[in-house]
Length: 418
Ligand code: PLP
Image (tube, rainbow, N blue to C red; front, side, top):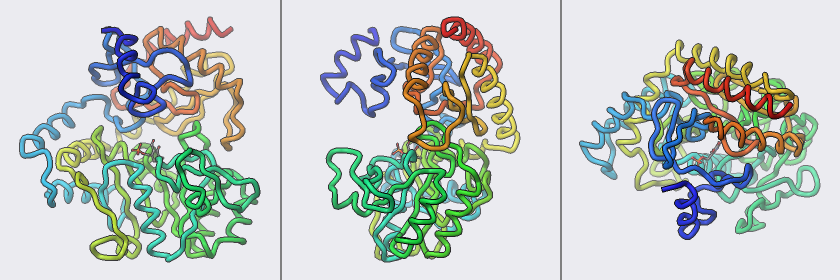
């Protein structure tokens, strides 16, 4: 079957023909590819066309697709039962590994997605502080819970406005949104409403509106202000966790949050999220405390096994290798005239504009050029995430062969965009 045939049927079943919006290719145009199998750094669509994958399921696959150790671990767990709805040793094994890698996670709770992790961490912060307001930053994405689908209101330090239909205005009123890289707005917000803020949540390495790398002084000041005002600092490390360093962005930047949220890599390709951190804050979670949070499939044994098999393979050598590859691949992409590639390790953002730090500074012309490049690369068998606002992901499985393939494709793009 062709991608087009499948898509025509898919749109009769699913909004936009997809199970998650950015997969629909609306940003870049064309028909989404339907994939039938993947291995290492490559995958194959239903028409038998093969691609070097630079999207990698949006981040979980740091070891590559279908890594044999991850598959074996999941298979072994699966044969012992898909789900128990009761505690199992595999949760403990994964928790132990997480504590080795991220020592500030004193207590944690497994959930099934990044969205759930964030939603639950915010509830924990509210329950702990007995406050209701939340601070977030424009350009950071924290999943699709009501409190996080909010954009800045008309004035500074004001009520937020829903950024999606279906989010009640009353919910959005409790979320304040300010710009990244705006030290003045940060100071003013805490001066005016610091005492009301239950939590400040940020992607410490913002990677959902491109890669909006922040000055460390901004993040350090955020840490100080949260401490001064009794506001829970939540690092959303659903992307950066276990990717930029064993201890994620917290380790990479040398800043410790009060709570952290993980997803993606922690499940090795299975649906897992986690929130955790200071044990006094986590002490409010049910059944120890009054903040309710639960999940039928939380701590699922198959997902725990895949997560553990992944985390066990994250060695210092692997991070060194990813750093080296990141530099090589970014340099290769920068051969395209006008293309810049801000980067942290294996997270790359190809942008036709010098690096930016704020969401509203990304130029529409740069995105239009990305869209052209995306189509050209796709024809050459290179699959970038289908939006100029998304970062590209490398994995341990991206080797010299793939780089050579991508360099050839880059040559074609460079010639076409001259
Ligand atoms: N937080 C961040 C930083 C994310 O990048 C994402 C998803 O991309 C989420 C939260 C939501 O995670 P999920 O899609 O697993 O619900």
